[in-house]
Length: 104
Ligand SMILES: [Zn+2]
Image (cartoon, rainbow, N blue to C red; front, side, top):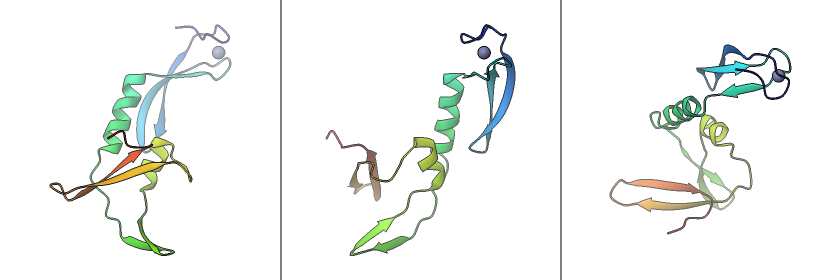
């Protein structure tokens, strides 16, 4: 497989990403990298679906808040000011935080 940028043959390599080893193709010529989208999606799914992390409710001004685990922030590329919507699932006794505004 040749690099679309410079025409050099890609070489298979591995890289640590969020504590997981993923396989990718690197161009020795220009440094272009290709990652198999399906493998990346599987790593993301595995990491996001990992066991729940214990979080304490904290006070922020007059509100109560729960902080987001760093791995989830990094995986989803979240940043301060991003819009979320939150609801509570009575049966599961679980908060559901949706990135962006909820459509329902
Ligand atoms: Zn290249």
